[in-house]
Image (cartoon, rainbow, N blue to C red; front, top):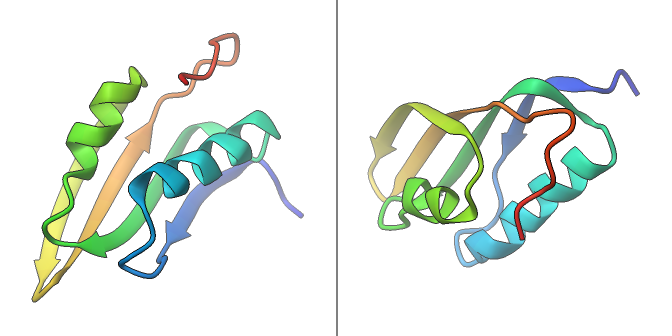
Length: 89
């Protein structure tokens, strides 16, 4: 498979809840499929506040860029997962 992955591209349907996308990212993390400094792109509706949502999880993340294309927004997020850290609930 090539895991752990350094880059992950997420493009779920716009109506897909951010909470479920985050749960998917957490599953990837828990299964050792994400590199400690993985970059994840996430395309979503431009009105969704992904940065605010992720901030509430307590994870160490850095939003590198957000680009808006009409109703779409693509976020480039750097996750700094700690190997020994407990995943946020």
